Amino acid sequence: MNPTLLDYYRLPEDLSNGITSSAPSEPVAPGFFRFGEKTICFGRCRIGVSKKVAGSEQFDASTNLSGEGRTVQLPFNFSEVVENLRLERYREKAMPERDSLVTSRAVRKLYYFLRKFLPVSVRRHLQRLYFQGWEELPFPAWPLDCTADTLHEKYLRLVMDANGVTRLPFIWFWPESAPACLVLTHDVETTAGRDFTDQLMDLDDSRGFKASFQVVPEKRYSVSDDYISRIKSRGFEVNVHDFNHDGNLYQSHELFLERAKQINEYTKKFGALGFRAGVMYRNLNWYEAFQFSYDMSVPNVAHLEPQRGGCCTVFPYFIGKILEIPLTTSQDYSVFQILNDYSIDLWKRQLELIRKRHGLMSFITHPDYLIDARPRKVYESLLDYLREMVARDKIWAALPGELDHWWRARRQMKLVRKDGGWQVEGPESNRASVAFAVADGQGVSYEFAGSHDRKGIPH
Image (tube, rainbow, N blue to C red; front, side, top):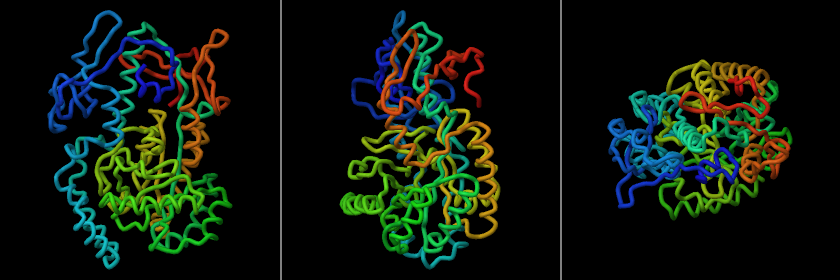
């Protein structure tokens, strides 16, 4: 059984299948290819690859499956391609050359030096100039990219066909058979945002939601013990937000290691389990220096982030020992300031797409940008919409720490045969559900054990 597929679905471990996947044995550079008409992949492939996304349609790996009988071989390594997406290893080849500006230490240092002297209107104008043309980026897909999830579904269907089955059991993604998960988070960037925290908690509480607050531990504003305890006493979470939010966390490995050590100390001081980098800057290759339990710094699709890219999944995944909880919707700042959109239309569109995938609906909003009446009214509309959705569809509204706990428990669960059926064993198994992947056309749909109406899990 492919370990990546097993970890995603939590399939029965004794399932044998004739699916194998491999990459060229000789050293070749990775590139872009497709697995089906619309599924863009990045990695090594025996039929060839393109240096650019635009040329990927010339190499469709789905037309080059080989093998005999119940044995099928893919011309690429499935786990390698999934990891390339989740860890954004395609970025250098997929992103426009001007994106290198954001990685320039000199440019970033100059911007952050001038930033405190620039009014919001000027910063907004500069940012809009930088993001000009973002709608034309072909990959990842806007406004949501589910390439990694589509690859899992396609691979699972091949496994089912190879085994001659039309229904395959797995451990459902969320507890209590929830069709999807919702997580709200707030990044506190300034003194004004810190001072608005209590009012923002009031807004969340008024709609029955709890959220996590990511606080900057140094230089931006003071973080008192009373501030931390007030947040926690109301059932909200506290996490660490960068070190001092100067944009330099990943500028050099030496500086990063110094700050990572201090960040680890602040997670202990705050009693925090999670972290988010400032401005969603990230270098996933360095995460082994961190000691927190989960990270929230990787967007699903980052067209409106200074560091482009995206993990192309709407589900949590592990980077070593750290659980990545990706951002799957657009930040409030991007919606309000970059797109000049004071509605919840984009969020509703993203939520609908995530809901169809039974994935994670995760949000970042900032108390700093919700102080004024106009954006606050939009946020209240969002909360009202989310409250109705959660109640109607029985979606699991969780704190990121609760999600971290569940996903780790699910990873330890096993699906075993018992009394002629299937049963989940392991930590938190009393909250787990057995679901079935069902052959549906050329793909799969999902239904719960005991469901015979073939309508599956409601969307």
